[in-house]
Amino acid sequence: MFWRELSKSNPAGYVLICFIFAAPVILTGCGRNKAPANYLARVNESYLTEESLRNRIDSASLSPQVKAECSQEWIKNELLFREAERAGITKDEKFNSLLEQNKRELAATFFVKQLLDKASISCSDAEVQAYYDEHQDEFQLASGAFLFDEAYFTNERAAQEFRNLTVQDGWNAATTRFSGNGATKSILQKVFRYAYQTSSDMQYRLLAMMAEGELSLVFQDDPSSWWVIRAGKSYNPGDVPPLLAVRPIIESRILEIKKKEYLNGYIQRLYTSNKIEITPQ
Figure 1: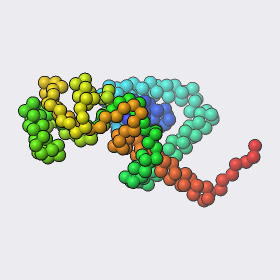
Figure 2: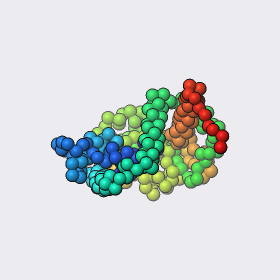
Figure 3: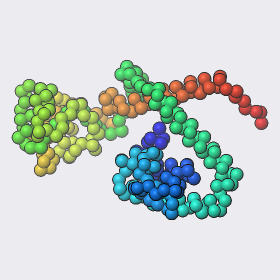
Figure 4: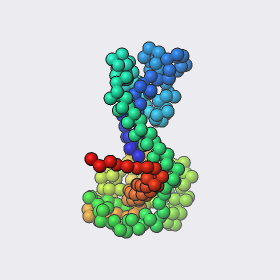
């Protein structure tokens, strides 16, 4: 989980850590004998290619700027690695002991990821509901929030037609009618947002004063965006938000609990099939 989250939040940092943990193997690039057709960086006869970067992280998700930063970091580490070789670091007993320890820990981390991926651990709606019912105090809001429906359009005419149809036949019917309309930007139901997340001051003021189920007039955010909202429930600080607002958090917690239990069970089975001993100190 750590590696996956790090790769999303800080791609350059993730690549750098990969370089550091696998130092002498990764830092030599793709080999010293034959130059690859395309490469991101080079130090003498050592190359960093797109493929070698992709083997450690999805390079397609990296911007050219981040790739350039990774290349600069690779060059720096490659130069220092060569100097370390000349200084005899790679033959040092402490270095190789640390390298072996890191290799074992990294291999274990990769194995755990593969193990949990194959386990296909999931949680049911009933489990999510039960967790929500038992832990509601943990989800009390720190600030005000709103539950509402919203529809955005590229022109005022479409927005007004949608509103008129909603008044006549209801929100669901209007949604079905406008789902394939080229002027429709988005139509969402049961949107939960904190007060500070509303799209504009106007939307915030409307939601704060509208009654539940009330439909707004058509308003404009910018020259190409018109919207209509239907108010739902308003929430004050200290209130418990609806399940849909905290469902991702609950699912994540349940999955982490299940993964930990699954892994602990797997390790316990390993204890029974291996000779384990801790000597008294």
